[in-house]
Length: 247
Image (cartoon, rainbow, N blue to C red; front, side, top):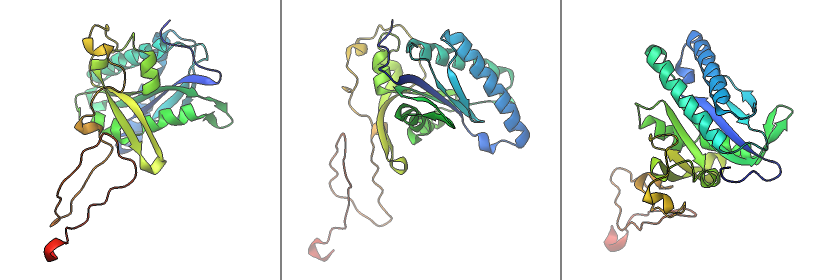
């Protein structure tokens, strides 16, 4: 067994979305939906877990695994999804599909009009985040960008290799959301845990430039004096003009 089983009411949740769906023609959207549905069906069969509850939404889906599902099933699904996606894109490059996927464990359950639960919401926030979209955009050769939540990644320490991921703070002010996630950087999924880096606990890595949750923009003609670097910033930051000596 890998990791722990979920607490009462908690489920493994996986969400997938097709990048650039709205830019396709009507006919191309239908073809993309057919192809995506086939990929997801095959990936879940390959995962070897009990049939998850799946909520399709045209250019993607949200899936809840059964209460007894092991986190390794999520990895198996993502491995199969990437393999199927790459094979499909080799056979039909003109209709190339690029996907984002996110996975988390948290409260989730079927409801009258889909799924309910903070675990489902959190998974979808990672899926739609600027961080994951930017990760796919900066790697034009990649077909799949993956975000794994911090707690789920901890469960998968014996399956996933830290050096194939980078930990980022996902901040979505418009959704009043923030949370740590691990973004896959394109290495094997999964890979044997043989790195010395693997001994590090999540959260011990120094934040890189892409992990910052803050951006400072200076307008034309503006000036900035001393900038103090911080790992995390809570609250606001205001840079005002220097008014000393009449300036």
